Length: 248
Image 1: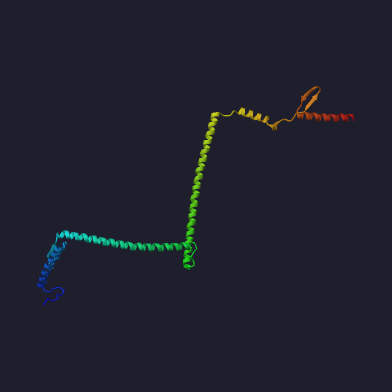
Image 2: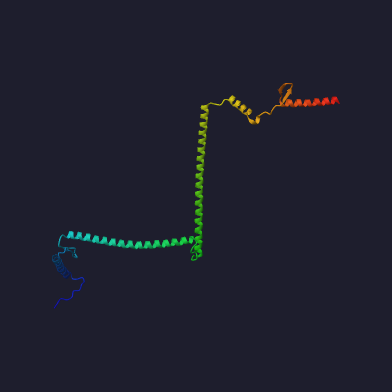
């Protein structure tokens, strides 16, 4: 007649519990030893009683087996963590791609709306929002254009000022060179200048004297000025008239 089935529950009787613990512990230690010998396995067994008494078995040094166990557990945890990180990274990458694609499509739709395309699907509120956006963009463009024009104007003023300074410097250098030439050649003689002017006046073709009429008396030819000749003619004419009147 065989043994009855043992119910797996806590044994209430302390003596029976202690006897069962001793028998099962010895049997477990025996099985661990047999496993290490038959299969050439590295076995470590650690047992603590309810009173805290330690019972252990090791096919080799238990501490070495425990260290090997920690390393193995750490590598497994690390591999699991790496796998989890890779899985989470892949999931986040897929989510990021979806988000970027949706944003890209939204930007394309907004660009078409700004160009005046596909406006039929927009509501009144969306059209008003689009109008405000266009007004803001136009105002910003005008402000930018004004600022660029003012900056360009300021640059032109600076260039004008620099060119004015360069012009003044060139004038001063030209005046210095002219003064240096006058100092080397010497000042002009006023008498020579005046004489040259008189010669130019007499030799000018516009100042040629008119021909002087000649008055012949006997065999001598005299040169009489034009005014004197006119007076002589007038006197002659008057004397002739007197003679005619006397003759009458």
